[in-house]
Length: 288
Image (cartoon, rainbow, N blue to C red; front, side):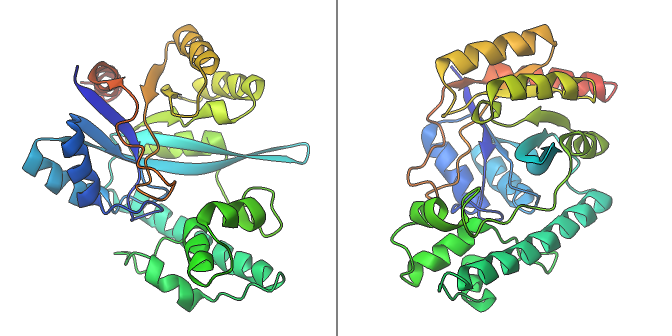
């Protein structure tokens, strides 16, 4: 059976593999296709495509956009995957550049909070963990801060940095300035892509089902159903939800290289058939 992984990050955002290394690893696994879905950047797509041509591995141009749902004082982070996006579009790249600048400001605030807990790390100490950016503003995220904390001996591990200081809801956490989920869907559609909600099983199930039904009305194309942290019950429920709303089922490992401890790429049996259905829907949407 031909297999794919439709959720792969590189070091252009918060993965540890370069785009080329991600493709090399996919080749060793015998995968037929991978989607490069870095957070809020498309810089990893072209180098991955060049490497993919060398090995005959299909590279799906993608992205993972952060969105924020806020209601009655409750804030939840929702991630939206975009597939087959027009990653060369200058207007899209400008919007991503703006998001990158906001990430830099967020990092500075997090470092300020850490100083209040006697953890003194400055932006210069983060630079060795950041990848050069064609836009001039490197992509910076909490992983890079965690890496600097480990190197400086402030914590013993990246997981410890998140669990004690910078994870969601922890003492030094800072929320992102983000789009609404509907805005993220619209942004992907404007770039001629398919919009798929990422790992909804990590959210409250009643909430995620309600959100998905709402987003379908705004053009949502699919649900990332097959995901390492989704339980069998979650998978069954999401499969029924996708069928009820006539949207796609997708799957991927959310591979970040070594950033999560183990390399996840290829650890799920995601059939190529799912990618074929995505291509069919995308072709219809573009009038093909």
